[in-house]
Structures are given as C-alpha cells and as structure tokens.
Length: 127
Image (cartoon, rainbow, N blue to C red; front, side):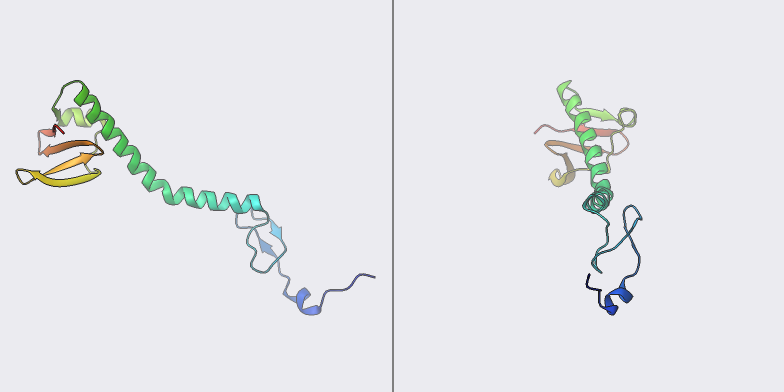
C-alpha cells in the first residue's frame, strides 16, 4: 500500500508555470523551469540581450578600424566629411584618447591614431 503524502505537502502544491515555455510543472518550491533545456534557453536569451549593446559598439569600432586601415594602406592621411558619411565612419566611438599632439585630442581606434579636424574630417596620424 503506497504511503500518502502529509496534508501540508498537498495543500502547498500550487500550479507553477515555466518562465521560458509557460508549461505547468511541479517540483521543488523554488524551481522556476520545467526542464534543463528551458533553463538554459532562458539564461542564454537574457545574456544575449544584455550583451547586445556591447556587440553593437564593437561592430562600429571594427568598421571604423577597417575604414582607417584601408585609408592608411592606400596612402591617404585625411578622410573628408563626405567620405566619412559615405563609408559610415562613426566618430562617436574610439578605444582611447590622449592629448599628445599640440594639446589637441588624439583618438585611437585600436592601433590607429587619428585626430578630428572639425568640419574638414579626420586626419590619420602616423604611429
């Protein structure tokens, strides 16, 4: 004959829903997911959302670096405003900044130093 669960266990059993898929499940009182796959999926999507901003900034920095490196390889030292807009260069983001050139800020996109020259555009500096 099976042993019946104590009455206080039966009274405290309420329906809980999985945070990922919404299915009804039972188990420990602090359990939030119906399975390991739902738990992993939930935490992976939460992590992906929190890192989306970093991914976007890194992609902008990588694009800026590719533009500056291509200009440097072709021997250009200046990137005009119209060319910056055409190639989608974003001057808002850099990896470092220093004041080493006549007291004016020098920005770095990884290993490439450059200086923003107001309306004219960007001057790519030698290393």
